[in-house]
Length: 292
Image 1 (cartoon, rainbow, N blue to C red):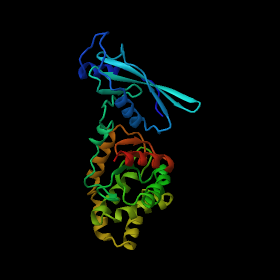
Image 2: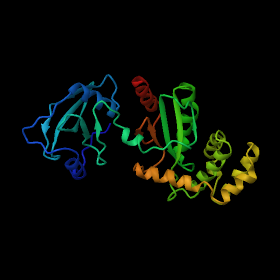
Image 3: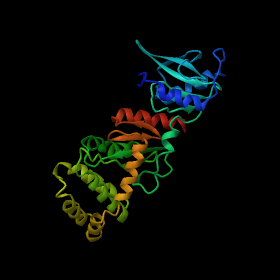
Image 4: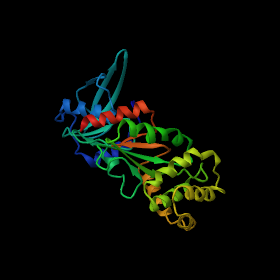
């Protein structure tokens, strides 16, 4: 869980423009039940974790906001976190984040991420109207992505065949992975020929990751194409002209706008996770399904 405190200068600047200054004696209208529900969802807290919400006190750090302490208890373990609440009792800012992810009580706290995610024209599998959408920012040369791929490709569809949609977004880490961007370009060329074949080459890149180098990538991809019903001539032309590289560049720009630092990074209905084990991912999915 996330309970660390951070420097508040960015939050203070945001708050001065986001809310009117309140006097030290002013108390916001406070819906404690709604606040607890929003915090539970934001933190992803299980039902068996006890949450005690304190009373608002005027904040010295954020003019116009109050501070609300939250005490969490699970068996013999406990932890404390701090939130800032606007004068109208609606806007919440988690104190542990320096990116100012303010959210409104009763609304999706991850809407700020959803607004930045562009899903049109991206490879996907699963029902388009699924209640849960998982967006993966991945790197086809990334060993951690390779380790996570079986969860997304095998376990997830077998457990939630009609409940989850998976969307792939390119995030090649070029500074450490020399052929990752070329792989993204090539995979998108395949996607344009046959959208569902994208997932075949996605699997193939991870299966053959250790055999690929920048020098042999194109020849191996074209060899794969010949065995999988893809027009190798058309594919070779697409790769040579880097016809899909602008699409990869747009996904990279989106990743940077979301302040992503590594791969794999997942967004589960907007909730960010820097790679997860199956048990944790399943808990996140169940949380979303219980909200629908």
